[in-house]
Length: 240
Image (cartoon, rainbow, N blue to C red; front, side):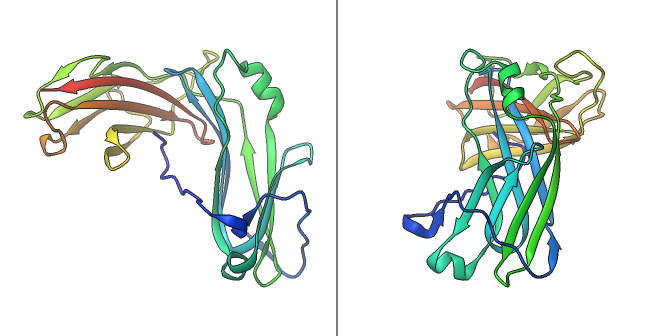
């Protein structure tokens, strides 16, 4: 489960084209409201991927360049969507396992540095943004409760707990910017709370009104560092 609300872009037919054309720019330069590039690492499933998000004025074209100046993502709206414009973009890469792609190979594929966002508004103005991307990832949250396979009484409030994260994956000191705690059955039945990353004893109380008896739940605890990179730990528990 992701820490940020996902903005799904589901389009049929020719409405959205991923093309190799270079965007043409002109007119006024307008900064994007947001531009982010970040890693999501699931320590339980041992898979990871890179994600791109931006938000700003309505646009018809957008591209993202890596620190070497290579365009790694190009998006162009067409026909009716080009007339309406888009204001946000969210793209999530595939998430290979560590067995398929080592972390070292992943870092070589997506180097640290400044990723440039360049687009064209509906009025022909240039949209620009920058995102600083690093390879620093928080260590995985540990000692999650409910633990894997736990049986919980749905009639009582559930107190979710976990150990605070104090280091990154390399073992260097790191205090997360925040934690995202997610308890869910599916996308339509989700309880989410964001906590400060500097809590000494992080915990979240899930009200019994959310829980149903005889149900399987997934608990996700996500530690996110200042640049947006996040590490997920998961357990599955059951209610009676």
